[in-house]
Image 1 (cartoon, rainbow over the protein chains, first blue to last red):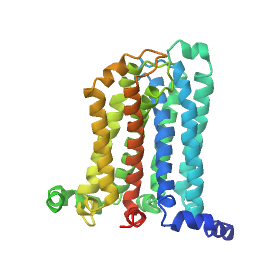
Image 2 (cartoon, one colour):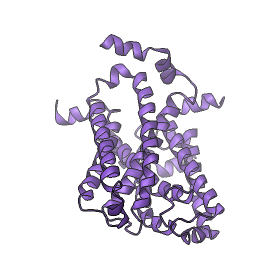
Image 3 (cartoon, rainbow over the protein chains, first blue to last red):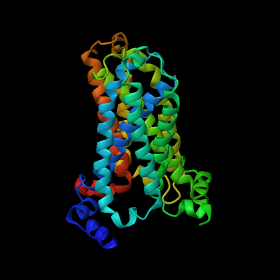
Image 4 (cartoon, rainbow over the protein chains, first blue to last red):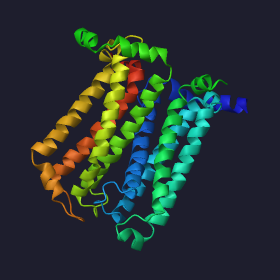
Length: 168
Length: 172
């Protein structure tokens, strides 16, 4: 297993990502990962806040058109994330925070799908302009999962910090 | 620059940062959350002006602007902790960092862009656009510039840690 990860990490692509002095290698991929986060997390949060009653003047139904942009942000991060993961496969896959992050991202995307189909898929419901009561827990869960993904994602850069505070 | 660095340096903050190992990561978390809120609100207004979700009257999106301002305030606060409380190298580390200076320049330009939006009457024209309406060209230019500038802010923000790569790429 470790051999396979080491092989990925020393592949020419992973080595290029990690070590090339080109601006388009590590640094560009890293900034794409932040831009993708801002897109998918930002637009999801804006929709969630609207479902919670903030900026009620914004009509609900047209917000459905934001989902392709959210997915664009998600896929930018899936691919940039895979490239960054390849570059540090042997360390990142042994970092517990990475799995917390993946869990939060998976949950956030599933919630996004449910909001899209259950809330925005019902044109009569969404056309009334009033967010249905069942959308509120979904919105809270969406905001929490994106926040959790950011916290866990940042913490991957500080292995051992949480452990040192929790005493294990 | 050195005078500015001396003015910004805070021994109290620097001591706080080095005494508690959670301060810096917490600052970074807030910086990313703030970025997400800022782009979620301002980016949504920009893409609406550019023609996405046209069923939304542009003026209604203004109600989300306080969320974007809150995100920006989070980032100014956490950013000041990084610069003023930098435990090694102090503020000078940042003021000599090309990626940081370019990031600050782009934030300044985003501010000028916002000022132009409001002072030139473009915002008023955009706010008058009803559901289904197309924004005036001037508003679209400002919106596209805003998206590009904030993408640049994110790019150079992430480059701060890799300033050497930037200098090498520019042949400096």
